[in-house]
Length: 136
Image 1 (cartoon, rainbow, N blue to C red):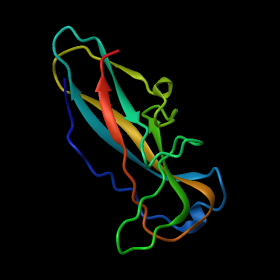
Image 2: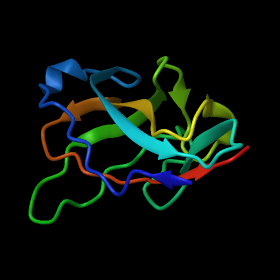
Image 3: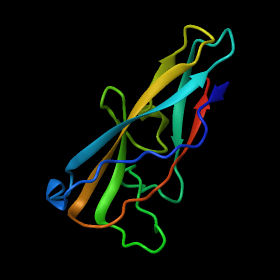
Image 4: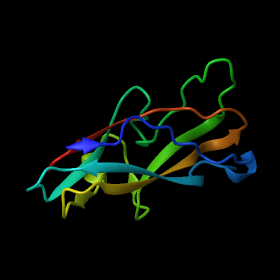
């Protein structure tokens, strides 16, 4: 199985007024991970692993120090499947199995969004997550 290499997803610039209180999400960006499975594979799951950047309560990604810049406050990054269903990072049950119909590359779309944990303050938003492609 072959998948996309490391990538950077750049979310749009957003006013703090777009994230006025906890639970509000805004500033979405679609990103694509391309997978390629050997013949005989019927499906794969792109699994986002829980790690040091994962908030265990929300399943969102906490901000990391961007080095020399001020991080935004009360902001996380939320991931979702292409259909908009929320992904809780580290919880396989929130991630969809992608049907594989050929050995051609298969694009798998996801959505990243800003997510407010309180009234957002201005600053840099930087985080990371590791993904794994698994055959169910």
